[in-house]
Amino acid sequence: MELGSLSKKEKIKRLLEQLENNLKISELWSTEEISEEKFSSKLPFCADTMSYPEWLQFVFIKKMQMLVEEDGDLPSASGLFPMAQVYFGRAIFRYRELAGILLKFDRILKEDIKE
Image (cartoon, rainbow, N blue to C red):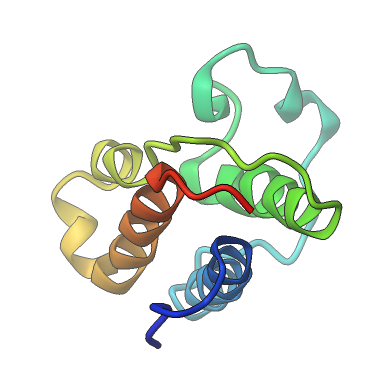
């Protein structure tokens, strides 16, 4: 899907939909909620309490949806793709489409566009 002429927030909305769909197709989406304790991490990406797909589902997607819906300030950087490379390692090639979506997030969030 081409995102070219959309506003930054509209691009984010579309990418969030793509991310959720891809996590489901890749069987990385959890149908069960996670425990509250997993949210108590002090590390980036809750790396000590959640798997990376859990963090994407329960933290990133929910937070970004809230920011878009409430017209909040979007982060200016994310590091989603490098974290995916660390988490998946060589298996990242199995998740090529997911990696592409995460890379698009990194690029769009880095854009200096004020809305």
